[in-house]
Length: 115
Length: 114
Image (cartoon, rainbow over the protein chains, first blue to last red):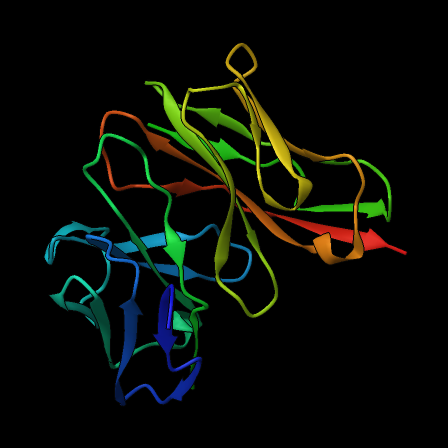
């Protein structure tokens, strides 16, 4: 498998549920990202991990908890979400630190619906 | 602070017509600039990127973009639209002086009429 893979593709959860989104990259990159894409809003950067350390946390509510166990895997743990958290969650990866601005490579996203 | 503005949330063209999607950026330092495309139910795919090597950048699927510093613009063009070009297009900017932040515009949905 190549590129960036996200599972599940679709997720419906109640506000009291706990679920996790998974992302795996097969590109040998050293940085991984979570973005949130809501209707009629620009993409919002949520978290960035570089070499498995979190380097960005853009004031995301604590009901979203990221985890990066190694450079190929990234998780987003969800707990007691709100209906306004319904969105497309996109994972991306890039290779940083080589003096060139490498682009982000995105997965196909997880469509989350909170009921 | 850096930002991008995409003029027009929707652009409609006829098949075979010129495609022009506008992007203006603001950045206090020289930026890296990108165009991404998103097809329905998919993630974002890189179309092209500007990294200061050349002002005219050619990308995939026949798209190209020209960096104009005097106009702070990076508009995306394609000479002849195809039905398969219908998608949402995002311009993004990133500072050259190191940052993980890629700032996206709000997107332009391209509609191609038969």
